[in-house]
Image 1 (tube, rainbow, N blue to C red):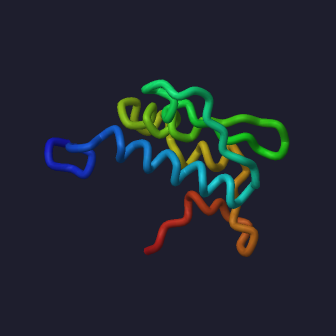
Image 2 (cartoon, rainbow, N blue to C red):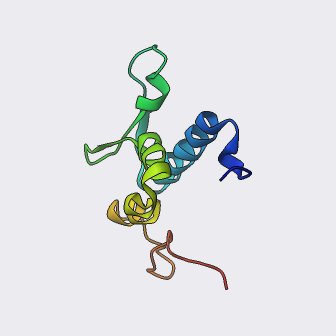
Image 3 (cartoon, rainbow, N blue to C red):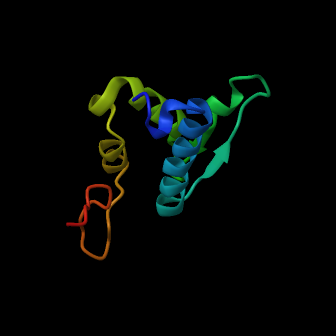
Amino acid sequence: MASGLLATSQGPRLFALGTHVGETVRQALGGAWAADGDGPTAEMNIALHLPDGSIIWPVQRVIKRFPNGPEDSIAFYGAALGLTDTSTNRRRWFHRRR
């Protein structure tokens, strides 16, 4: 979109969205952030190490979602990780207000 939120400062905004997704996962499932390296692409390779031993890269997932569209859905990413709303047993990522 020429006039959308991602029309300017796309890199920092996608990074912010990716870290938000990762932090949402970390708060729900636990885990710790880990960065590897100091180079110009180090921030894109920030990983989230989950308690079960899994390693995910939410920033890369969000960056990939931008050009690929719905086939790299963030909602399905959360659902695949097992994020659910325990109060209603509904997938929290799919809940939409009407």
